[in-house]
Image (cartoon, rainbow, N blue to C red):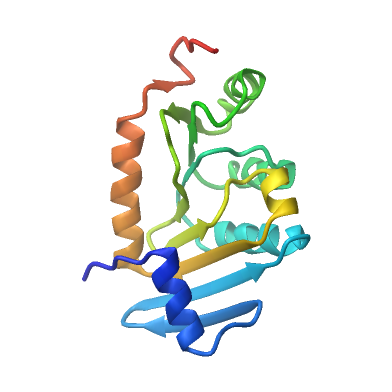
Length: 184
């Protein structure tokens, strides 16, 4: 069974289920869906939800996020890299050239990093059953200054659909850290 969930549809489902509080969970068919709504100025709530979603399931971790400069979440990935394979796909225009060089030079030994053009996705596929979606990039500025929604979905079907999307993005990325990068 294929699921097509958008943030708007998911929010409508959650609100319709009476889950307009800061956190909520619903289940339908084979999917468990948990959402965290962090208000502006509540960065620890969004970070904690992303961290929990990344740590909850065993198995490989594939992340597609436009910009990823939040130091606490980077530390989570560094710690998890000793336990599982990690692939990170970033927007080539989403990070400055110094950040791109840092990722390529220092983090490549821990996990695979690639850059794609115009990447606007914000999701992680965690193992065979988990998906974490967020409403913004994983930057300190985004997490600290704006209201955020983090949605965790536990479903083999949903994880498979997002995994297929990640594979298409990964194989269509324009450069990997092993390639010579032309930095702006």
